[in-house]
Length: 514
Image (cartoon, rainbow, N blue to C red; front, side):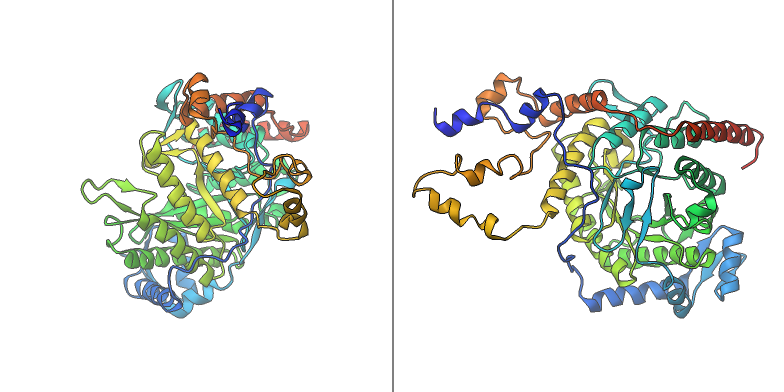
């Protein structure tokens, strides 16, 4: 056996770290993307999409089911047809409205050290959100429940590559639908000190998130309006329809200075024409319409330009994600967001039904699209499976590994006298090696990214260790992470006030009040 083969058989970095009882991971930090964004479209093509979207808004319009929101547009000079609920906007009006949205804003959780910046080259990776089902390789597939919600929240807190919690990581279906958001908000606040997404389906759920985060931070709702602490996703029912609850949630959040990500769900071939150009034009029109509404509610309200454009399988009609078309849309949408000077939200998702090679390569494809497109918020970045119908614990671990790879890739290359290492080269004879040089010994622990999941053993050693696949190793890692997890302390008076608010609101909601 060669010297190199003997070295490899001693075990992978992951094995050595795990034997010490700690999962290796990068320190908590908000990554930044130092590289220029990819330009998939020319300036003329971006402008053509912009002009097409203005024509959609002016000639076709958007159906807006909220009377309050229609009144705001009407007062601003839009053409509103109350019979059809269609709102049409003159190009000058839409451009004037979106011009007041900020290019950068912050989001502060109860831990000010984990404040997130959105805009520019800042990035944040979010936990999966919304699936009705959950899967892991020990307990199988099941309906989401509160215990699973808490498990995902603990893992999001423990793994440093996750920066923000999604809107209801999984649906706790055993709890009453009208009050379960109170339990999930409290779990997000108590079990983690990350920022979290509100469930902005209507005014009440949005206001509850704002009130509870203010309590957890020890500030007033009025103070939080100038220092946002929660955010949400506002979905557009493509093609060209805003329902009343989404509009009401958007208005409640914007009125209180909390950012929203206006995100059309545009599947080419189903909700838009089959071409990427048409999908981008329709997405852009729908996004600009929602962004304009935030500024009608509160000039300068923080808002994301949201993109969720992919395609369907034309044989079955099923949604597909992580496709070449999805990746192109992620990059091109970043160009549109930058054209308006807005922070950008996209998602690295997949359509696989199981944690396998498909789940990984589709996610990685979409992740590159988000990164090359300079997305600021990578929503659904950890744990997404089945096209969003299932949250997976093993997939969460695989995703964290991929996110850490991306974060390490984004670290800029340092070129200086030390890294050029001429002295180290002069110390080694031709045909020699650098393993024992002072230059290597001073840097070997931090020279390269250390994976938590990859297994770098040779085949014989891997076989002797049980021939475990990456998915099987992921099962062991999420279990180990739960053992390592430590609940972040919340000041007793704030915890008490939080519980009192939840109890009071549940009684109010139970009487039929919003």
